Image 1 (cartoon, rainbow, N blue to C red):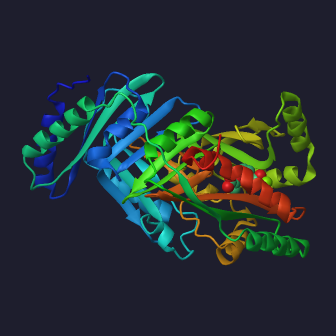
Image 2 (image 1 turned 90 degrees about the vertical axis):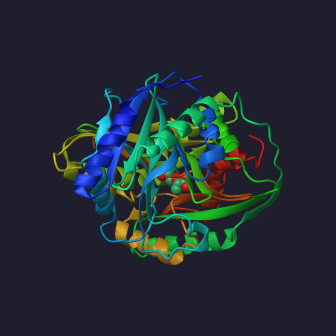
Image 3 (image 1 turned 90 degrees about the horizontal axis):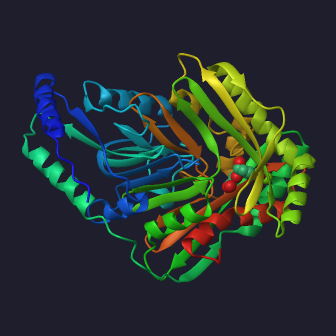
Amino acid sequence: MVTIHDTELKEGIHEAIEKAKALSKPILVSEVKKINEIDPLLFFHAGQARYEGERFFWKEDSGNEVFVGMGICGQIQSDQAADRFFLVKKEWEALLQDMVIYNSYSNKGTGPLLFGGFSFDPNKEKTKLWSKFSHSLFHLPLFMYSIVDGEAFLTTNVICTQHDDLSLYKKIEANRQAILTDLPSGLPARSNTLLKDEEINPEAWMETVESVVNDMMNGLYQKVVLAREERLAFSQQISIEDVLGNLLSRQKNSFIFAFEASGDCFIGATPERLVKKEGKTLFSTCLAGSIRRGVTEEEDQELGKELLQDPKNTVEHHYVVEMITAAMKETCESVSIPDKPVLMKLKDIQHLYTPVTGTANKDSSLLTLVERLHPTPALGGVPTESAIKVIREREELDRGFYAAPIGWLDYRGDGEFAVALRSGLIQGDEASIFAGCGVVQHSDPLSEYEETKIKFRPMRSALGGMKQ
Ligand SMILES: C=C(O[C@@H]1C=C(C(=O)O)C=C[C@H]1O)C(=O)O
Ligand SMILES: [Mg+2]
């Protein structure tokens, strides 16, 4: 059992209420405690009774960072398209202003941290599918459990107003003790049956690929990523914990995320980093070009070799490298990028991969970088504007948060966003899953269709829609 005995939170809440009165505005209090390590999935599950619909889960690809948030202390949300990245930054800074903070640790993932993301295209009309997700949506959790480089922490965030009194402390303290003492010893065993598995208009999708290829032959643009949807229905409500557990055990080298919003949950296991910021150091990833995994070790290596030499996939990859290099050069004092891709091998698929690092200019905040990079030609295309227009007008899909930046930023300005691929939206006993691929002049509609089928696999198998 983990018990926290302290007076800091009480004092902090007292101080914040006084400040709220003096300044006539809400004041954030944040307190960080080191705690014993617990299984993050069990912590996520422990929040179900009180905070279902208000939780998030994040594991970095390396596994060095896991953050689990529950309860919503503060929310930043907007459907405004113009300046959407800047607006989040501005609101986050306003929320942090005059805060009272007790954090004696320099570790990332401690203290106030905003988790959430952006939609792929705020100018595409939103459908009912994504009605629970604003085009920009971020949560500051009430409680956040983090494991960072083997150490475990619990952050508690409270926003105090001038009308609050110390009964607020008692309430928060009781909830905090309850989630830490209610820790289950395991996840309940549940069975769920797949009732329906529907590919949405695959033929129409292949026709769109063909017409986009024709446009490319006529020189209208060079690359467009086209995606499609599959809709699954199950006999029982889908357990987010079970899906997360499957993703964690099967997609070891991916970013694993779950983001609950008003009852729906956006969840996935993506291999693609958009940008990570650690002080002035930046990391980004060029990932595009794909081939299946081999059945035998030998076949797998052959396929990898084929991918590295394949002109169509190399071109597809190169567009991404060009754009990310240009974006990083604009925002960095120095950039380092290898001149050739290597293979990234995942459970179901292998990709061409070029990692990028840089040292940020003093004006480059994390959200400036997200704005500059999204969408890269790994999810949008080349030229970006034409590709977005083609996607907006011809893709029969509301991408919502699929293929868009998802991640976190903290009160120190550090953070990380991944590109939300290999993902799905869970809505009770139903789910939509999404997959796309980079269409270039030498694309063949049927092979691209087959490629999307492989990309559906991680989510289909995690949902229980197929044998792994
Ligand atoms: C669009 C997706 O993946 C992207 C497209 C790729 C490709 O076409 O080769 C490879 C990796 C990702 O950049 C997806 O998984 O849905
Ligand atoms: Mg491809």
